[in-house]
Length: 387
Image 1 (tube, rainbow, N blue to C red):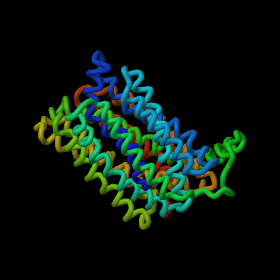
Image 2: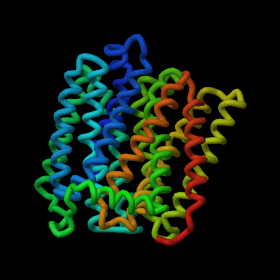
Image 3: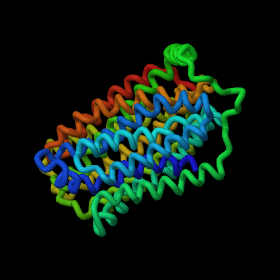
């Protein structure tokens, strides 16, 4: 159920990718690159929303917070479907992101209410593995909808999916936060919790690493459709290849569930960043220094994209668990701050990479390599430990 709540986020992002050219043609024909902001603005709204959702879930319970966010999401989706201009669409997407923040904050806190440490990392990896199936199907769904009607119908599909999943949550999921463990919404208590988080070095570094990892994903999602269209001339097959990338990259979450207990969260994260950085630099060198056939370059891009997506499965669950391990008593607030900070900051540093798109994958890979280097250096400052 948590995975399907998270899937609402993936569907809201990835089903939009095939529609970006249609949105640009209708709402911003003079500047087609601006349509990419449909992705980034959603992430920004989700980041801002989580800053509120976590403390609210600490005060009123996880389930009530999730229901409130679902209502905002449904209203915003209807506004997106009716938006007459790009500015209004971006505003509605921002609101939609706020509504989608429920699973990112209250959902993670719900898991932390019942699990911690490596066990939480294992559960979150499983959630991410199931959740990763949605990006495989989402662009295909968007493409099919575009065959029968306007891009606006995609938002109708969002509404239907959200209604089904949230009905499941309301009917089947009991509240996980006991009344005796709730914290009232008082500025003094929030400030006290924020100061406590600020003293946890592992939580701070984990949050920064999540920011950099998410930035690579946001930049990739923003640029991917353009790369397939302009560099490789594969507009029609983009949803299929995106599905292949998403499905194969699920292996990252699966490998993490098998190794995190044996190797520990720190070691898995370090090894992942080293591997991803090596792959990025190798592919970047090959495509810039050698006159490769277009088919070989395309294959390298697919492999690199799989690596980016797999990195999420191998790091984000572990980084979340590392950050939250000592913060169980303020789980909602901690999940809120960590997710809000990492999401908003990731958008801020990823948008310039997306807007730098020049018809090739070089700006994206340069940006991703910089993010990976910084994340690796941060992780190397942590003390290895098991669990």
